[in-house]
Length: 540
Image 1 (cartoon, rainbow, N blue to C red):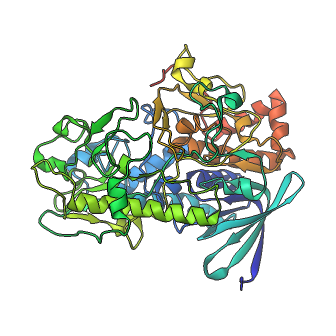
Image 2: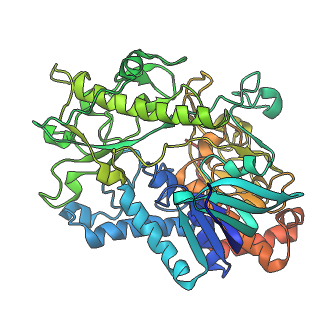
Image 3: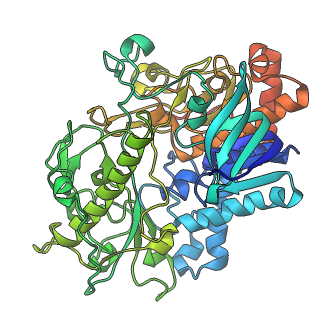
């Protein structure tokens, strides 16, 4: 039997505690409003922490191109390492400390450090009583009255149920769950060319063609030891499986498509590569191929005092664990559970293959010394707490951001489409992983872009705001709006917008409908440290 229902009343209900959700809660609480923030796992931080993915960022992130609060997050993460870790002399002197020396980002860090800093940023608001955080709570239902969402029911541990009534409800879930629960118009998967006019869109819409999810894990290497994991039940299937559109052979191999060209490329793996005379900066140098170990390394021995680490720790989010057998939402709970389990089995199969069958540079096979680090991921099995979700349900909003608004090939000035209602900026290539509909990679140059306010406004709902990867992008433009600093910017603006409407007795559409109101809201954002426009930089 379900447990009793606890009723909470608040100004702003933020459902989902990923980066967008945390940013939204900070923004609204900082302006003195009561906030309830819920999160399905027991870690806030989403893709940075519970999903284990170091931040994917643009080339100018150390100078500009993010909000002041996101920059504080980055600065505080570095300060945490400087305060608490025994850093090497080189790391201490580094202006832009990168503890993992990973090549995907200038800030490759352990998930636990991200959690610690995010919790510290939230702590003053929890202490004041303005913010209540509900970990281990997932949304199960939403109540509506016409075009308003009046409350959200959450399922908590041990059968606990909580009903949160908020004057504003922000959907910061990883998959845009509230959009469906509250019957807010939304899309999933790939739109058709007729719907969006996008050159790269398919001829027919494919709602279940979604980017692969990946169940990440952390590894170290203990030479001379045997940490071989049990052979997963479906190992034989995954070892020989070649998904549609996948070039170069089976999924469990070191050959995978190059995202920008689709050509097969043999990667290399050299655990603890600095032992072999390699440098620490170029992930393409070992063996002349794309070297995997350094790519998302989150703890490098060279960053710490001698003896602190016996091995580097690398985060496995490589093409071989892209799960393409089906989407983890959109087909009902049974299918979602099956595909979540399948994604976990694929990752464990890849690990077993690495330990037993993977070809080594010395001509041997397998690295039995590869060992999972459950402590790094905060789990018992060593996998991340949640799958890395690249693509969410997307609200149908007043403005839809399309490929031709951001793709470099369609923007001769090298800048994304300008929006007079800009509420933020971001930059990343249009980076679409293969999909559950059989589409291959789509990876094309894009321009530094703006975030239009109207892309946060559902066409009908008056008090539900998307606050993560569920804004009014398309399947294609989600590929450049889904990354860490942009998700944070979206959530922060949603929190600021809810606060602005509460303070001025407005609804979001009324803010967007009049230029002077847009300008007043933009002034609030600028005062909070939100950048609204780019300097003259070109796409990449």
